[in-house]
Length: 294
Ligand SMILES: Nc1ncnc2c1ncn2[C@@H]1O[C@H](COP(=O)(O)OP(=O)(O)O)[C@@H](O)[C@H]1O
Ligand SMILES: O=C(COP(=O)(O)O)[C@H](O)[C@H](O)COP(=O)(O)O
Image (cartoon, rainbow, N blue to C red; front, side, top):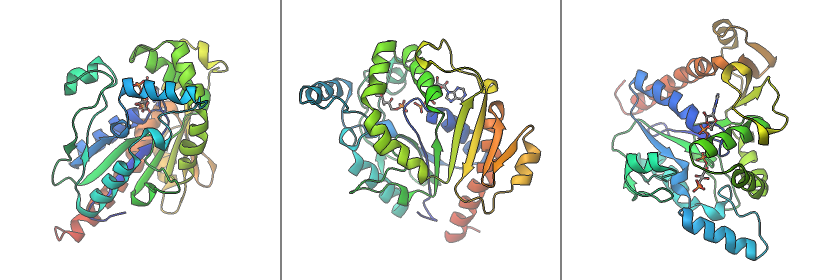
């Protein structure tokens, strides 16, 4: 953690909605004049698409049918930890982009399934914002969570997460239902071992739950909309959270536990603005104070 160079990380499975949440944070940063260095976790995949497919085949030939992007073996975890450490110490680091599709390839230059070159983070940023699979990863040899000032989990219930991944990977990445299903099955051990434990370390979890039937996610024709869902917002430490204010500002919201707010799905962006804008203010005030600006 760092007063001068804070880190906000949004962590979640592939298809959970971390990119969607990022767009809300970008709007908060723009409105509050925060100069954020935004890092995509996919930049720290260890292999490009072709090599990853070779590795998956090699591992399967050796009897390991669960080699996946969720595990540390398929990611540059040292590099990611070095980024978090370097940024928290000096506001510096480097990142790149993983080009998932032709749209991203056209935006950054390069071929789908490959990486752009490593580039230094912009200078003089106010904070680092990470979105990806491993913002709160802790293993025997690595600990990302200790560098993060605000760790947010994006954790739709699993049937909804699978529907979101199936829909996104089919419509935006050109994969078949069978290919996405194979990925969901292959990554399951790593999901349990490396993704889920992060949500016990987060400061806040957002869990979208559909109020329509998602019993068989593999035949779902569309993603349940925001208005077809509720969001369970769990605060690890409810101290200092102004629940009466949030309940008053968010129509039809209620408390299910002393640290858990439930809101209509369509109010998720408003809830994030109300919850995180004051937090960003506090981060920036602390940073400006320690830099002698305030
Ligand atoms: N809160 C939400 N409400 C409705 N659809 C969502 C929500 N969050 C994510 N989705 C949908 O789920 C899919 C995956 O979301 P995305 O943000 O790309 O996931 P990730 O970046 O975690 O892989 C996208 O098609 C997106 O439109
Ligand atoms: O999905 C993710 C990461 O989660 P997110 O969904 O948040 O990007 C991987 O980057 C792709 O699976 C890469 O694999 P592929 O090269 O097969 O697309």
